[in-house]
Length: 491
Image (cartoon, rainbow, N blue to C red):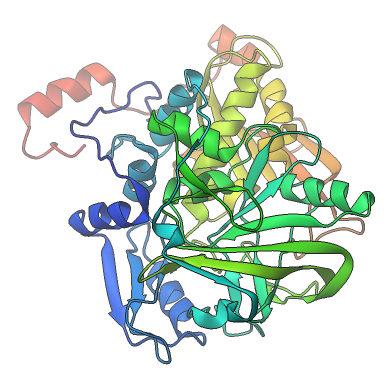
């Protein structure tokens, strides 16, 4: 069974700077696939889905070039985070683990001593190779895809970082929000209620003010990963990325917004959203695995400038039926934040947290603990499901004992089938935070969720009255592996 404490350390952790160095490393790892000639109209997104849906965590990152109707070198990148190794590479963590949830443990431990670093402004960078203003502005200069077969519009922003500024503080937030293209000078920006970018926009609009925005559509994968992570209010993803790097992120001043824009970004669109200016937005294939058909009027962005570097790469992440190319991205980042929240509430002996990829994201969260007191498991369930990282669109929250690997779904199901009573070990939360992405969303954007206590009853555990597990002990394992080294080398 699972042993929660051990993380295998690997020598020679990979370092990179910017998307292009990241791609070089991924290529050397044998995880980059280049495809020439795929069309922007549904072909690139569909190819990605076909390569990802049954890959079991082995799908490549896909770089599309020679897109019909566009110059060679104007590329798109899909599937950045389809494997554990690429997530680990992005975070500067060891590339190999005994259990999937150990990468969350490593990331959580990294965050414990993380020191935020403000970005460093530089006078120039590759993103300023080309600056389009006025009549020259055209976001369709790039091979912006129609991602899914049932989508009706092209989407510039999927694997993006939308930069907004709090009107009441010197705080820039980066969020991954989808951006539909209406024409070369107008794009949408769908932001769910409660997300930091939405709170910023609501503040501006409540005061009758326009909001400036910069949409980064090709960037260091670390920034994209953080933009999709539930970081606390007031913490900029740029500063967090600097802390992970151990050095400040280099940024240039946006010519229209004045915002800090990553100097090595690929494509950036600057503009403004004006109160009262709305257009119908959607439909789009979303992360729940369904076509999100909540087509309603939403604020849009008037594009003022377009910045891009030579041979730009448009990063894309169209979600589809799980497991998709963003399951690990959202799951690992969210699990680390859940772990942080549990410990911040003083809950002891948290041994692992995992968001199962088929969930997707935070819809099936499992926490592994070593019980220390009556009610410990229930404390964990309620905090994990209600903290910022676990609250949005959750569905199942499960807690298991220390002998269950929380990232191994077969072990979790075994615990749910043998240590869980459907009357006494279940709690329900009603009217929780949801959104139109949920196909069974309740009126008002609420949902209900289930909390499952799949731990051995604490009193029976304490008294040793629960049946013993059929298992090979650690001592016998070691003895057999030494005697039959070749046969049991991978066990």
